[in-house]
Length: 323
Image (cartoon, rainbow, N blue to C red; front, side, top):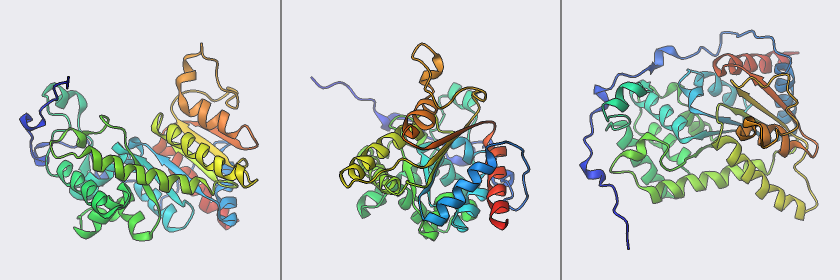
C-alpha cells in the first residue's frame, strides 16, 4: 500500500526580505590582494596547475558551500578568467548560496534561530527562483549549473559580478552542480521538482565525467566537500578509466589535494586508514588522497581554512607563472 506523503502545500513560507543573512557581498575577498602563506605543498600544487595548463589537461576544483560563504568567489572567478581552472564543481548548497548572493546580495541563515522557529530554509523569492531555473534547465535539456548561470544572466541579477555560476556561464567554462536530495533548503519548497533536479544534476555529472576523461597530467583539488566531492569524483574516475583501459590508455598520473580542517598533517595520507580508525570514514582521505592515486598519481593534504588557503594558492599560481 502507498505510504502517506508530507503535504508541502501546508508550509508557511516567508519572504527572503524577512531573513537576516549571516554573510553579505561586502565580505567578499579581494582577489588582487596577495595572501602570503608558507606551506610546503602550496608551491607544488601551484606548479601542478601550471603543468596541467601547458598539457591542456583538466584542472577541476570541487567546491563546498563554505568556500562560497567565506567570500572566496572573486578569487575563483579570476582563476577561471585566466584559464588556470578548467572546471568548477559545486555541491547543491554551494550553488544555492552563489545564486542567493547574486540575486539579493546575502546568504547563509542562522541555523539555531530559524530551526527553532521552524523556518529554516522556508523562504520564497530566492528558493522559488532557483527552482524555476532547475525547471528551465530540464525543459532546455541543459545541466543545472548552466541553467542557473543563464537565469542570473537573463534576469540581470544585481550582484552577479562575483557569482561563480554566472561567470562560468559567460566564459563558457563548465561549472557543474551535484545535488543530494533532502540536503538543500530549496528542496523544502512546494515548487521543487525532484525529477527536473535529478535530470539536470545528472547531466552535470556526465559533463563532469567528460572532464575527468582528460585528467591524465591534470589536477583534482577538493575544497570543503567531505562527501559529495570524493563520491562524485570516484564514480566519474571509474567510468573514465573504464573507457581509457579499453583503448589501452590510462588516467594515472595526476595530482590531487584536499584542504580541510581535520588535523592529518604528519600522517601517511597515501595509505588509507584502517576500518577501526574513525578517520576511515573521512572520505577525502581514503578516496582522494590514497586509493585513486595509487597507480602513479600524487596527493597532498593541507589542514587549514579555505579562506586562507585558496587565496594563497591563487597567489602562488600567478607568482610561479611569472618566474
